[in-house]
Amino acid sequence: MPEASPRVLPVQAEVVPLGRVNQVACAVAAAHIKALLGLSSQVVQAAPEPDFAYLPVRGQHDAAALMDYLAKRRPSGVIRVGVTEADLCLPVFTFVFGEARLGGGVAVASLHRLWEGRYGRSAPRSLAYRRLAKVVCHETGHALGLEHCQELGCLMRFAGGLTTLDRLKMWFCPACAGELSARRAEPFSV
Amino acid sequence: MTRDFRILVVDDELAMRESLAGWLHKEGYAADCAAGGAEALELLGGRTYDLLLVDIKMPGMDGLELLRKMKETHPQTLVVIITAYGSIESAVQAMKQGAQDYLLKPFDPEELILLIAKLARQRELIRENQALKERLREQERTGWGDLVADSKAMRAVMRLVEEVAASDSPVLITGETGTGKEMVARALHAASQRAYGPFVPINCGGQNESLLESELFGHERGAFTGAVQARRGRLEMADGGTLFLDEVGEIPPKMQVDLLRVLEEKAFTRLGGSQTVHSDFRLVSATHRDLAALVRAGEVRQDFFYRINVIAVRLPPLRERDDDIGLLAQYFLLRYGRETGKTVEGLTPEALRILNAYAWPGNVRELKNVMERAVVIARQPLIGKNELTFLQPDQESGPELISLEEMERRHIQRVLEAEEGNITHAAQVLGIDRRTLTRKLRRQEAK
Ligand SMILES: Nc1ncnc2c1ncn2[C@@H]1O[C@H](COP(=O)(O)OP(=O)(O)OP(=O)(O)O)[C@@H](O)[C@H]1O
Ligand SMILES: [Mg+2]
Ligand SMILES: [Zn+2]
Ligand SMILES: [Zn+2]
Image (cartoon, rainbow over all chains, first blue to last red; front, side, top):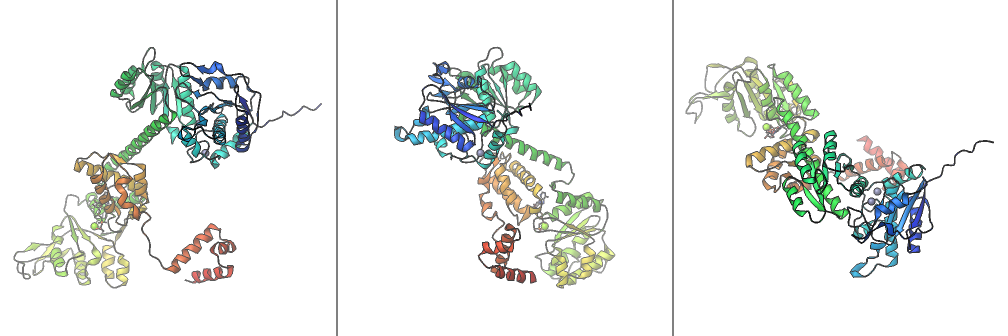
C-alpha cells in the first residue's frame, strides 16, 4: 500500500467561550477571524467557569492564567481564542481588553469593558460586538506572531482605551496583512 | 527603530516579569528578564541595555542597591522604577539616585508605552548628536582650522587644495555666494609654504575704479588730491604671502592689463611714483560669477582669465553637500552656544530634516545666520522645528517662476513617466487625444 502523504493542515482558529458567555458575541468573533485573518474558525464547546484565574486582591481575572489554561493540550496549528465576560488584568497592568502569547497560538478577549458607552450609559450591542471583534482580531494576530503596528487605523495598533479602540478600522494595513498571509500559510508556525 | 532599544526587566515575581516582557515584545522591543539584582548585574556584564525596568522590593539585592551599583558601571543606561503601593519613598529616593522615572504597579499599558517611547526618543537624540559631535572632533584633526568639510564633494575640494598648496600657481576659486570661497582661500594659504607670510584680501567689487587702483598699487604722497601721505598697496603688503582678489570679475578691463603685467614681472610702481617695487606673492582669486561668460561678453580679458585661472577650484553649493548640512549646523550651534553662554546641545531629527530639505540659496553663510538666530530664540537645549519656523515657507526651494509652456512641458513629462512612456495612456490621463499629444511632443523635441 502506498504510504499516505502527511496531510498539511492550514492554521485554524477555535473560539472558546470561557464559562457563560454571550453567544452572539462569540459568533461575531469567529466570523471576524474568518473574514479578516482568513483562518477557518468556529465557536467550540464552552469551557467551565474560569474561577481558577480569579484574583481576589484585584477583583479581576488573570489573563495569563487563562492563557496557560488554553495552551494546555492545544493541538499545533490551532489557535485557541478564549472569550470571557470577566474583567481581565495582568500582574503589571491595571486591565487589558485582551491578551495573547506572541506566536504562541493562544489568546483571550474580554467583553467586560466593551459595554461602556457615552454619558455613563451602556454601549449599544452592535458597538460592543464590533469592539470585541477588533480585540479578538488583534490578539489572534499576536497569537500568530504579529507585533504591534504604528499604522493609523490598523488593527495591530495598540489600543489602551476605548477611544483608541473605536478609532481602529476593521482593517489590517498592507504590511500586517502580508505578514498574516505568510503566517497562516505555514501550518506549524503556531 | 524600536529593535535597537534593548530593555531589561528586573522583578522577583515571575508573573510580573513575564507579562511585562511579553508585552514589550509585542511592542517590538527586545527585552530580557532578570529575577533579581545579582542576575541583572550579570546580564549587564554581557551586553548593553538602554533601559532597565526595576522593581524596588526584591529579596537579596534590592532595586535601590542595583541602581547604585549599575550607575557606576553603566552610567548611560536609563532606569525606570516599577513599584507597588507603599514604596513611594524608596521610589523617590531612586529618582534622586538617577532613575529617570517610576511607575506604580499595576499600571496602564498606555502609560508605559508613552514613557518608553519618550525614553527611546531621548536616547536616539543623544546618540545622533553624539555622532555629530564625534564627526566634528574628527574634523578638528584635519588641520583645516574652522573649515568643516566632510561631504564627498568637499573632501575632494580639500584634497585638491592640499595638493596645489605647495606650488605657486595662481588659483581661481568659484562658487555661489556664501559657499566659503574666502575660507578655502585662507586654508590654501595656511597649507602653503607661505603660511608664515601675510594673507592679504582685497574686495574688487563695489569700489570705484581709482580707489581700487590705489588700494592695490598704493600711492606716493601727492599722487592725487587727498593723497597727503604715501601708502603701501595690497600688492606690496602681500610680499612673501598670498594675495586674495575677491570678486575678481569686477576688476575693470584696463586694470586687468596692469595686473597682468604685475603677475608676469612681479614688480610695479605705486601711483604717482617711479620707483619699481618688487613683490613676491601667490595669487588666489575668487568669484561667484561665470568668468568664461564674462570673457565672451568682453567684460573680462581672455589673457587675464587664463593667467588667474591656472588651477580651478569649484566649491559645490551647500545643497550638493548633504552630509555637511547637519555637521555645519551642529558646528555653528555649539559655537554660538559657547559665545552666548546658552546651553545648546544639538538638533532634533525633525529639525535636521527641515535643514536637509531646504535649498540654501545663501549657502553656508545663510546656514550660519539661521543657526545664530535659532540659538538666540531657543528655549531648550535641543533646536527643533519651532526654532526654524522662519525657514519653512521656502522649504520647497521657493516657487520657481516658469512660463505656461514650460509648465506644460514638465507636466507632460511627469505623466509620461508615470505611464511608463505609453502615449495612449498618457493622452488619456491628460484628457487630450493621442495625436495632439504626439504633436506637442514633437514640438517640444524640436526645441
Ligand atoms: N566649510 C565651512 N565651514 C565652516 N564655516 C564656513 C564654511 N564655509 C563657509 N563658512 C562660513 O560661512 C560664511 C561665508 O563664507 P565665505 O565668506 O568664505 O563665503 P564666500 O564664498 O566668500 O561668499 P561670497 O561669495 O558671498 O563672498 C563665513 O562666515 C564662513 O566662516
Ligand atoms: Mg567672499
Ligand atoms: Zn497588542
Ligand atoms: Zn499594521
